[in-house]
Length: 181
Image (cartoon, rainbow, N blue to C red; front, side, top):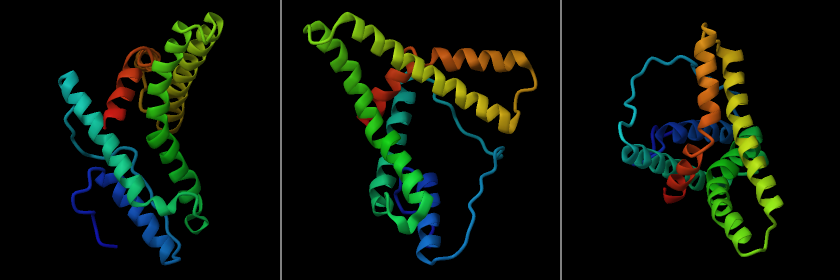
C-alpha cells in the first residue's frame, strides 16, 4: 500500500486511512485494531506557545488527511469508514473549529448589537458549556468503563474535575489554535 505518505503531518491518521482505503479498494476482508496501552514515549508541551504550535500542527495533519482522502467521504464503497469515520472527521476537524470560533465571536456581537436578547445569550452559553462538559465527562466514563485504568476513586474524581474545568477557557483556546492551523 506504499507505506507512510512522505511529508505527512498526520502520519498516524494517514496510515490508518490508507490501510482502510487499500483494503476496501482490493475488496478484502480486514480488521484494524488498536492497542489501548501502547508502549511509547512522547513529550508534553512545556509552555503555552509550544502547546499552541502542537495543536495547530495536529489540526493541519487532520485536514491534510481529510482532503487527501476526501473521495472516501460518504462514498458507499468505503462503508462505515466513509460514512461514519469520514463524516466524523468532516464535522469534528473541518467544520467544528470554525463554527465554534464564529459562535464565540458572533453570539456576543449579536447581543451587543441588540440582535439577540440577553435570555437567548444566557441560554446559548449554558447550552454550549453543558454540552462541552457532558462530552468530556461521558468520554471519561466510556474510557474508564472500557479500560479501567484508574483503580483509585480519587484519581477518577480529579480527572472528572479536569474534564469539567477544561470547558472554561482551554476548549476555547484550543479552537482558536485549531482555526489557526
